Image (cartoon, rainbow, N blue to C red; front, side, top):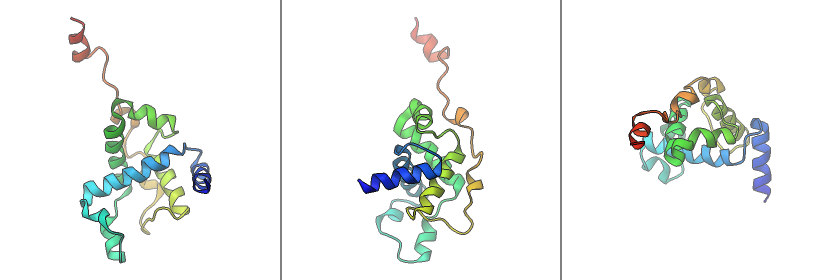
Length: 142
């Protein structure tokens, strides 16, 4: 129970995002690390700074990984789900991540900045819903 209260405090500090966004970011980070560095990167905790550096992903890489993870998890509803949680831009990802860093739940390098998450992509473009008048919809009317 106290972990949930702490999570709510972290999300409040980040900007009032829904508690579900924490799990999404955590799982999306694991997805991104696995995609970029392979499964072995997540098998054992890092034992040195070199191990930790070898798992690092940039803000841009993480935003793209979160996009892919969101689409894998929620398909055409990804944008709707993220917006319901208060996430409407890549900068929102950064705000959540840096709140988690401040709480000691994640780590960054000295080079990581919130600005790395600003305008990585436009949500309305990458989470676009299919055109209801497009070829599939038009073909299904016949």
